[in-house]
Image 1 (cartoon, rainbow, N blue to C red):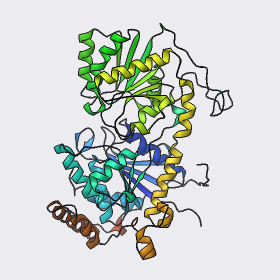
Image 2 (spheres, helix red, strand yellow; image 1 turned 120 degrees about the horizontal axis):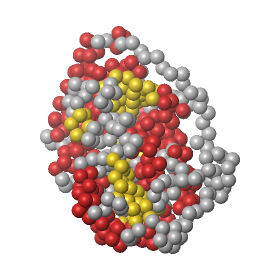
Image 3 (cartoon, rainbow, N blue to C red; image 1 turned 45 degrees about the vertical axis):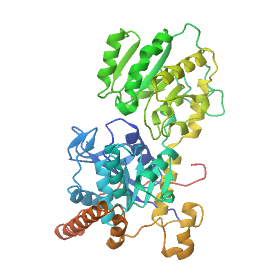
Image 4 (cartoon, rainbow, N blue to C red; image 1 turned 120 degrees about the vertical axis):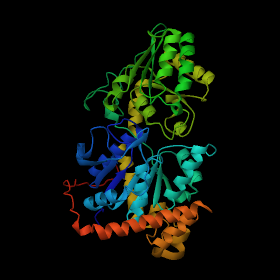
Length: 485
């Protein structure tokens, strides 16, 4: 039987032209799913002059909807006002699966709610880690429990992220899959790496480029590329840089990124007279990241919380030795010979950076081999294939036994009539799921769902779907599946 293709909508506040890991993840997965024959559109908010419909490379269609931004590119939550526009887009594009990204994205949360009301299959990818004690985390976790109570399947980018999401939203672990981020390795080659496949060292299994050994007096350049926010450990970085330079005078820093903590770094540079030691580049576009990275020897990642950390994979692919904090899902990302881990503390970060500098000067680390090793470990084609399998599981196109890898209790007891991976769209069943979210919250969530359903009925009457024009599709790509993808 031929492999089924799907019409998919990726919904998130965070997308290009804004740089970032979530933005890159959505774009790359969408592009590879299109390569596999699926149709993918992206729904995000307007960015400055980017409004309406835009087309990106590979036929990715992007809807920039006009919603106000409140904080860090997250749109103002309205709960219901997005529904008529969302319904129009879904019907125009004949969407079957809505895939939301990011627990702090208002468009994602609202889109998943509306999609279930419309009878569409839903998938959610969580890219973040949150605590359980702070007021903000408690409210976010309750909102996440509300949204994910009726989602067909959840994807997390690391096993740590999965554990965090399962606990925060009180989920069945069977509903959550782990599919990591990846990178386009060709875009993150080390300096002087052969570009032609036929050239010596141009692929895995060939001789890598000749290693550049650091002499005892050669300067060591440390690169930091990050959003300059508190959760990215910028306070930790600000306190550590003067001490690292004092311990290792022949060290330089290159810092790329923008955010509210930039002024703290600038003040630190002024107070310690480090203008000739620390270079601040400001915001850089994603296509410029590689050019910045290859200027360095070490990549420093002082984040306080991280579900995955795509940037450290990109750094290793560029041939940089990685110093990072052992928080969240970071320890799962790279093998130990590519990294030096530190506690999220100033003293330990300074010590770990010193170890990395000493290892490079003693030529104990073969960073010229990192690119080929990372290329084998992370591939967007593989990520898209695994994501497609989730779509097949929630759509009932593969058996529950095949989806989960073994026969579940539900499938054994009820056979094809009951699937924990395929949720009922019946309103009464949805209300039962939401009602279990809390004594008071459950009632409030049920009220929201009922109002959402009434708005849907009104839209169906006021603007019948047969009066909505269907958008013309790009020609679908023909894809032959194989075990090598």
